[in-house]
Image 1 (cartoon, rainbow, N blue to C red):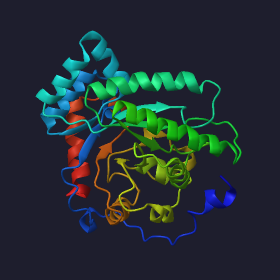
Image 2: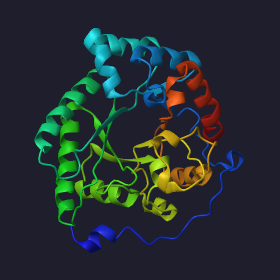
Image 3: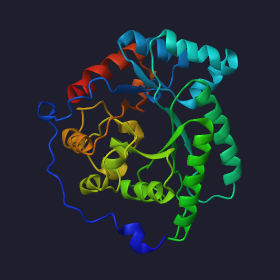
Length: 297
């Protein structure tokens, strides 16, 4: 991949920014609210699922390291039945890093991914999140390996019947922006490999609002949906995420673009604030519904 190929997606016009739910053009998203289990990380898998269902959540994004202890104690079939009995649909599961960038232990990481996808597939979960996580220095030539790596992820996903969704993480040196994620997924060109959009990583990181125009119609596969407070973005961390509408991200404008780009997936509220994670999952789910629904109706 040469510099021209890598940079060819940049340079499009900016967008006007507002953040008023009343002006949202996201009609049709009302049934797409999802709750990410990170928002209740202090609680066990079954506790979270039961609370989310009781609150009225219908779509959930369980974390693989929360599923596994439950399955080891019970079984994958029991976990799948639990979701079914609670009326819950799990469109996606989080997550695994250090598979996209070149690494000496890549083969070992791939074997761990296969084990995760086997479990995810057994529960009938359709997608699995993979992200880059590194502070190493890289060159343009390293992105050739990156394209090969993500193409391999797509092929492994096809083997297990799971779509791999690629998430850019703010400030990561290999894949920290939307344009880089798009360049890798497009370069790999695999049907089981699609990009993920995270509101926090987009707004707080090095991506730009005009980068949204780079999305092709129907290209985006999954969305992590939340807000970020005001203040220096350089010092904000995952723990600072807040419920939709409680921060300064221009949510309405972003939703308008996603709708224009024919996004028809789920909006998974993903929070990492320790107080929220420790709180009663029922209350967390109720607040997620209250805050996110104002934008998704």
